[in-house]
Length: 71
Image 1: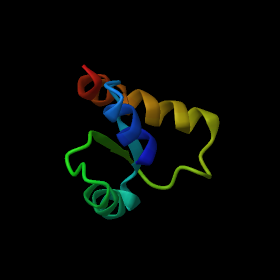
Image 2 (image 1 turned 180 degrees about the horizontal axis):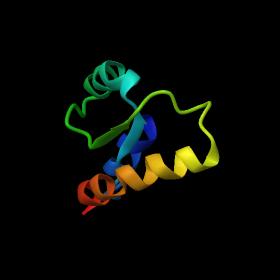
Image 3 (image 1 turned 90 degrees about the vertical axis):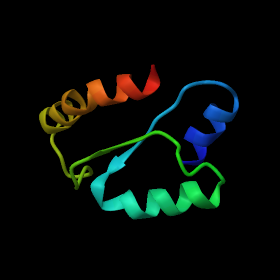
């Protein structure tokens, strides 16, 4: 979240990406950092034990939403 807000502050579009498990924590962090509406995309949880193919599928499933929030 810190990096996303930093880049947005620099005028560079950015989107925070995390698994759904962290939705509430992401909102709390965005609120605390003064940017409650920062763009974010959530994918299914968990991420860390996924195979490469599963990670590619997660990315493929999120790419349109990511691009939409960057443009």
